[in-house]
Length: 81
Image (cartoon, rainbow, N blue to C red; front, top):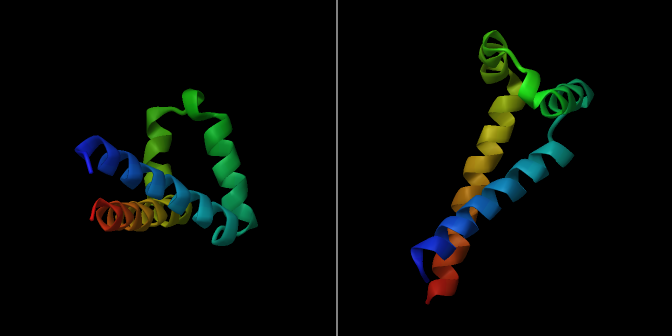
């Protein structure tokens, strides 16, 4: 499998991992923060970035992206053979 395909599968796995976290693992307040973040993505001040990185929502989504990416890479290696 080409490197480009492997990268795309890893990114797709990461996105799916974030979606799973969003659907199943965020509570009502975290979902509200998620919506506020994405609705105001281009209006965020640099001082707010620190709060985003410290939030539990960010941690859960980052972990979901990493785990999903690893699973996507494993799937890519399985289909390579």
